[in-house]
Image (tube, rainbow, N blue to C red; front, side, top):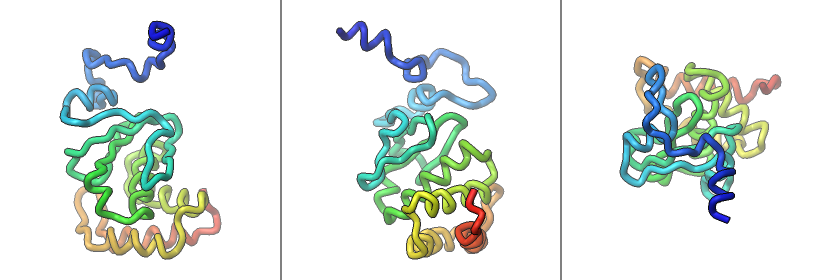
Length: 168
C-alpha cells in the first residue's frame, strides 16, 4: 500500500535538493534544505491562519520560523514565519499571506501586491474597513526602502484600492 502512495505522490513534493538552483530561484525543497531547522512544506490549501485555510492557487507554503520577516515569496511558493505572525491580528496575518500571494500572480511590484491583497480580502469577505485600519496601524510605522514605499504611503494606496469599485 505504501508503494502505491509513494508512486502516486506529486512530483512537486519530491525531495530533490540536487537540482541546481536556476536563476537564483530555489525550489521549496531547496529552500528548506538551505535554511534547515524546523522549516517544512505545507501543501497548497493546507496552510491555516487562525483556523482559516489560505489559498494561493496551487502554490505550497514553506513554514520558516527563522525568516527575518512575517512572509516572503519566491516564484512558485510562499514562505511564512508563524512566530512573527503570532504577534499580529487575523486581518493583518491574512493580508500578509495575500500580499505574498499577490507576488505570485502579479509579479514583484510591492504596490501591486498590496492592492491585490486588500482587493482579495474585500472580494472574499475577510477584510472589512476595521481590518484595513488594523493593517494600516501595522504598516504605517514602516520606513521606505529600495523595495517598499513608506508605510503611510502604502496605507493610503491600499485604502484607494480597497474602495475601488472595479475590484480586480
